[in-house]
Image (cartoon, rainbow, N blue to C red):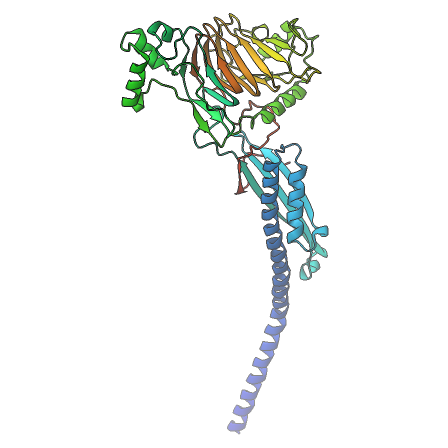
Length: 460
């Protein structure tokens, strides 16, 4: 009897355990199905996301190169957008169902970012039971950085005292004997403190100045009698390369002289629109001065230019008629952008007059930009100037007896004719802007590469 009872008890325990497995199975089965469903749906989403990300990376790089090579700007970049489209199309078989957004921005340092965002509606299966719907949107974004790296010798475009192109550089003094100048003739020449650089492969590097270019250190030696000839300065410089008296023009093969012009011009137009100002010949000069003094104006775009009697197509700008001498906002350069329309006679000759205009050392520096070609005659006798002159397509002829210049000059060609002192000072960086939302254009030698999302740029 006991044996039979034990057999029954054992059988009952086995049946009860089998029932527990059924209960556990009933409880766990929905969880297992859910896990499988989540795995399928999220795995499918991850696959689409990965595919989109690879396509977005390739599209951003393609767009960045097209942006650079076609010299497009952040406000209008159709060739970059088309290049990114073709790249994405080649990497996505269902491209017609892909949403695409392309944007470009420039940061305060002048670095341009090209952004591509791709989006796709991906079907879901298990997640639809949780109110997600039949599909969900998957997005991927990628950023290409278009950054200027500078030249091997020139560095920043505004790091040089003089930068010139195919027009060459000349320093001429009619009274000098180029073979054996006297001390009085040497002291009657100009002195230069800073680098002089020919920009680009077409820069005219011919030695066509009349004398060795001396710096201010050499001037001191001549004045106190330490040197008695030009050869003294040459010999000293050869023996002391770290304390040279000679300024020798260099060449930068990698930097384009005009690569910042479009950005400055775009900034000027943006500032003009922001302030709703139109500079015409009817503007009152006093009113312009007052608005410049208000510190709300960073750019004077295409200001009043008079057509003088000395020929059609010629223009003149008297900078001291516009810039108040007591404007002491010295950390914020004022851009004067002259963008002349081409007349039937061409651009002619442009005259910039600084005559007798002595800017205080702490005054607001002036960045004078001229977009035309031809020649700029700068009348600058007995004047003091702080700022930069930027005319990448024009030749500058300096009538500069007694000028003290602090800043930099960038032009197609430059000729110095008088007795003056030129001292390099940096008033602006490659970003070239002073607060306006500009028209960023990449230089032809900028590098393009993927980067993380910039933290200081809004893409809204």
